[in-house]
Length: 212
Length: 190
Figure: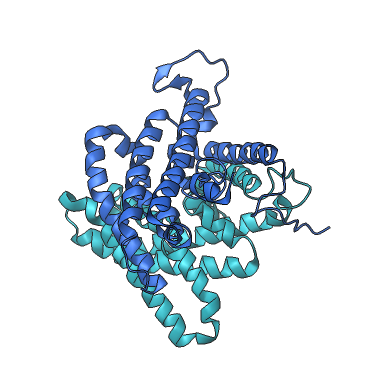
């Protein structure tokens, strides 16, 4: 894959924002325990992030960094309002369950920090493709987490009971979310290492800092 | 005994271990003692002063326009962000370059914003907490909770990043599993 393709489509698998960048992980850990929650979070995250980054791309680049960060956060806080109003129509039950994590999606680091570091250095068309791939990457992880945790924690899929022999109730709890996401990150890195045939290509954790 | 009870209460109400708020930030804080002091200090300032401002917003905001709460909280944190940068520039110019990055990292993240929303949520359920003192102490408690969680992670940071851990799990995946185990222990205290 060329560098340009990597930059554009890497957000889906190669450089997933949750599994690789560890961004927006709080809602995945706490609320990603059922498919219904996952659907509601996917809707909210996708709508808020896409619209906010798109609108933020019109903010003058000459402004100081601090001012731009505040403006990006304000834009996403404004975008959040119609998105939440629409969610009341489509996912009325989930809003209650997701609670404080709904507004927190609007201050996610993809909007506030990655806009400056990544998206606004690209051409508009490339930026939209790259942004969509990052959003799809989050959506896939969220769906997978919601599906597996619901299946093994409650023995259901989308609230329908299925025949599962082993139930792990702890998976629905925050600690279950931490452990599940940690394992998922490890498996993701292992597969990525196999695919790229280079297991040391991870930028963030290749340093050995042991005392030895 | 009081101290043990307080410590258990702090752990049980810990926003990172019980609500995963600010997990990404804690990984930065746990990297070194300098990062820990810098990030935890700035986050505590944001949560404490931000909580005081959040009280005023909650006091004035009508329930019918509750969806505007995020916007007002963002304005408050934005103002605090600028004020803190200006204060450091004015009074601690020598360390400005160094402190600036902690302020950037700490301003808009789940740890700070999540704390404000959690306090609001608790206050709406428990009327006795709906006062300035209740908000400020809850904000301070959240900051101290962040420090405790960061210290717990710092204790194992080097080992979780060591070459003895399989490459795929080294670093963040191992730290997430570690936080999960600590979170499980805290859960049992509730």
